[in-house]
Length: 367
Ligand code: UD1
Image (cartoon, rainbow, N blue to C red):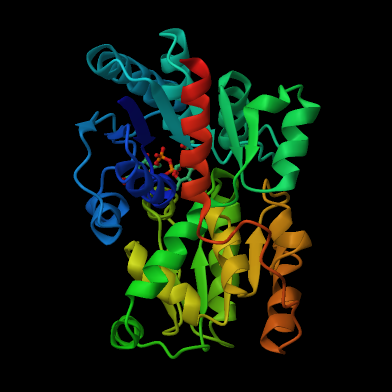
């Protein structure tokens, strides 16, 4: 029996881990064990996702909480090392690019436990993003690199990754989107819209939490002023990340907002997918949402100078914007003048199965 630790820490990890947990649970000879570092700890940022994805309680919960990058990363390493010593797993699987991803891959490798990275090879080439450092370090030491798209393979090759470590499997987040879409009834969909007083196709959905947008008072104030202005053309709903909310308070930003600019608490997974499916367009700085909107063929404006997911621009419905271009681009969308996009190869809801097969082969080679 192969014991495989699946590592999650922050909100975007949960929907990437769930399909793999279920696929492994149904595979003879694989015993998946869920380790939650506790990087995200609020009910709505964490436990609600476990509930919506039908996941069991994590087998290990490390309770590391928030802190500086060094504090958070170090706490994960210290606590995860104890789990590794206790569990003695055959493989550790990490997801995405959060601090828990890099912390657990480093700790496992130092104890000679092989590591697989799901969502390998993505690069923004922007070293001011903490996630870019996390991605590079994790990929440099992982034994198995599961990429979502061809650009990932190319990035890894140009960094010298041995090609038998790289395996293109597609986008595992799409597995979860496809599953949850099949589970949300028309009545539930309507109830979510009614709850926020929204009409399908007649609102913009916003999420912003990147340090580059929300950690400077001037940038955050300009963004809020723009959103307030946008809400005069179309209702704006903004489920606000705790980081963004905390900064508004800390910076003493005190604005009067229009009635149609709805700042709400973060929402759970089912509700967020429902809100995306029915929106006119999305404005975001998230990585995953660029991909979900491409899958849903929904116009997406990404408020960032770069993206580690260029396929969503080249092939999907995404465009990068800044505060000078966002207004014009949103007007284009509202005028119905936007690209249709196509869904990238292997973003088909079957990625978890391909990962399980590749892991089984890897284990067989090592025996
Ligand atoms: C983290 C990830 C980011 C990901 C994002 C999604 C890193 C470096 N960043 O950023 O890649 O896109 O998650 O949400 O790993 N907080 C709460 N409750 C929580 C979690 C956080 O109130 O459950 C607050 C805390 O005040 C904390 C702040 O949010 O200081 C930031 O949290 P942190 O985990 O440091 O980074 P995120 O901005 O959430």
